[in-house]
Length: 538
Image 1 (tube, rainbow, N blue to C red):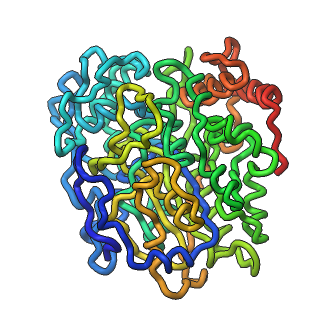
Image 2 (cartoon, one colour):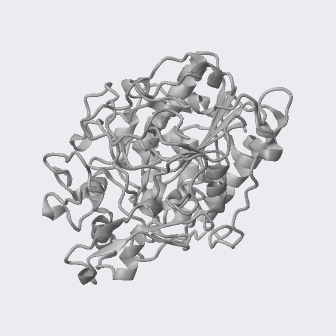
Image 3 (cartoon, rainbow, N blue to C red):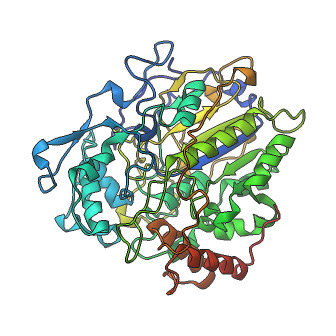
């Protein structure tokens, strides 16, 4: 069952989110939720986590189509300078190693250009850090109407050489083409089958974390497409555009941001520090408070949940290469802790039965990922409307196309099991939905021209939780669940996190000297929170 038209192959200069995405049941859909909970995970593509969700032998119900890897003969070519290049290409294959791809792929804008178009321009960009790459940042002079999506393997090999100091073997680089079957990721697969999976939800920017999370919160990224290139972290101090949190506040609607206090800071507050620091005592809370609030009917109209992204993450981010003398050592990481987090949040909502406030019937739960992080996907990103509110265009990107597909699941009592949503959606669809529900108005031209989500709540009667699926996460012990590895060097992402916090407190573009290990960074962040006078009451 396709809910609203067919999936379109929209080129870079095509029409973004055309008028066919209008729903007859918009008003009814808006009346089917009073609370929205968003959980945004990290750095996985749709194909990587859900590409095998349905297959020709096990298709979705009601003759729906599904854009997965099992429906195509997919591969990427091996560059001639790589090990075993005589093999020609690496096909997509099923994987069961929970911390693949290991090490982490490149995710900055130049890496995404190579992944999408198979180009390295100029050739001097081939084996260097993204921040040392130069114009045109691997982008072809003329974008093809159809993107080949054939450079993931090339970029993984190039980035491996840049970060590890040597060329990878065939067995080391082929993993970028691996995708997990449902039995390997049972929680997200169960929810994708048990409610609605969106198989054309694209991240907002073809690049990394800071800019994509900024788009989810404010429908823009202040013109930036990287965390720290080329000018460091202080650029994010100027990210002062209005957020959806402030818009809700000004319209008399409540909101909260929940995160694990082990991270010291929520990432969203660091990215939008000037806007959100005033709300830390009242609106930014720990995960224990989320579970208490959910059970007692005290969730606000809008809830945004951040997984642990800094220390011993449960965000599903692939393992990141360490910075420093242990450059080839990989910090433990796995999809399994993220599966456990999704399981806990889902069951909290499923078991919420309060007669006042939030409960299982009136809550729309959205699970998505900020970006694909360099993991493989085969679907071409569509065109997009630029936000239109900045003169900055870092690396000459015009914000006129979206990034790679990411997993997205909609959970609601008003959604039938086995639903596949094949319409083009994106992170700003969340803002559009909140705006439609509470008459908030748009933040930028991007969310104004984004499709909304309420049309997918199509049931006339709610499904009782006894009809909701049961999730069972894998139970293997994950190295790092309880061990802190405080003596290990910082990963690249941890360095960005610490660098951004330091820039806000001290105006520096650098991670301070002497902050080299995880333990040192944790102590440093605890000092930074005092300097910035940030406190949380829950």
